[in-house]
Length: 77
Image (tube, rainbow, N blue to C red; front, side, top):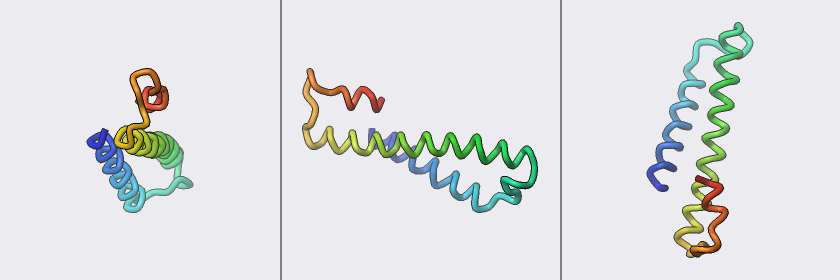
């Protein structure tokens, strides 16, 4: 879980740098619009996943799950 969180965070850092250094904007052309909308949607998906996995990792270490009560963990995977 920790490795997945680290990889997700690294992806978000790389995406932020890519946005910051891009030589085109969302208003430049269809390419700019498509690029920022698709990568932005994917980045949002990764951000939500990293948050979800971080919370579930905390809950694992806090012993919030049992063999019969672990639905939150299953939803995050």
